[in-house]
Image 1 (cartoon, helix red, strand yellow):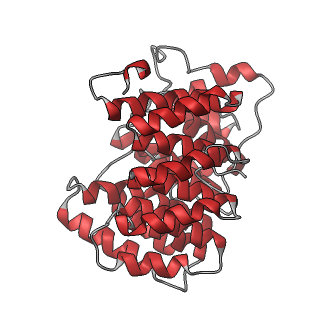
Image 2 (cartoon, helix red, strand yellow):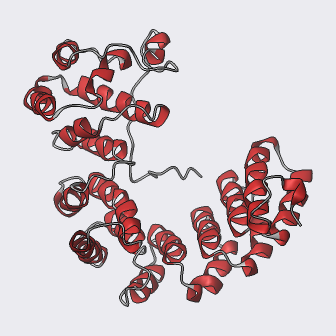
Amino acid sequence: MSLLPDDDHLRVFSIDSPEDESELDEGFEDEPPVEKPAVADVLESLRAGEARPATLVGFSDLESADAALVAAAWLEVPSATRLAAVQALVDMVEERLDFHFGRFFRVALDDDDARVRQLAITGLWEDEGTDLPGRLCKVMESDVSQDVRAQAAQGLARFADLAELGQLDPGVAADLRERLFAVATDEDQSWHVRRRAVEAASSFGTDPRLPDLIERMFEEDELGLRASAVYAMGRAMDSRWLATTINEFVSDDAEIRYEAARAAGLLADTDALPGLSELAQDEDLEVRLAAIGSIGQIGGPSAVRILRRLLDDAPDTDEEAIDDALIEASIVADPLSLDTGDAP
């Protein structure tokens, strides 16, 4: 099973590596280039069919005027090159925190190619610009591609988190809440989109509509919807879902076991630890890693003991995750200790 941020129905498109692999290293040094290429030079290179990371750095920290220049010229770039460029910039964002391509990715949101639009949303994953909730809601509601709509709904989850924490403008937060619930309950929408909208809406754990929404989705025959319902149970942080979550530890479907493991960590109840200790030995690697991470999230002396036992016979693929979980669990047990050996 592969459960990356985008699963099989939310396809993320990768670009073939260039013949000279060293091209991918350009621009990824410890320090950024002394001089960024001019935006006009980047566009000229793209029109010629070249999408080199060292050149694309010129799209970082665009001024408004330069963003307008890119927007005016973007569709003159060959479609394959546009796709390659956006993929390369998404990779850069993941590698380097000092690159900021938010204005460029906003331009790419209007691309003709759904794959480019989907990747642009991915590239905005840490951008908390006040314009984005409304922009992504519009994409979620009306983009012609269900993959792009679902990606937008998934991208709205972080803004729902901010809204619930009181860190989003109240008007924006209220609008976001209503639009997420509207899409989540719209049976004319693709279920791929609805499931991501429910996941995002579940941040609003105190909304009286949420329990019924989760329950109805959990009762659906489609396993993907059930899996999202289980994940939403955890994001809602409502103890009413604990027993249901634990029951799904023994599901025949690996995706549901995975989401149940994640939900248990979010619910943070020690009653889930015995079941999670079993899931941490599941045949599916990603289920095991999710269970290990959740044991660490729950933390405390019992979690530390479970993780130490797991470490004794853990396969190489799991050792790093267990070590990280031990540190987290030990901090919960003793916030003054960063040493797993000091945990009670």
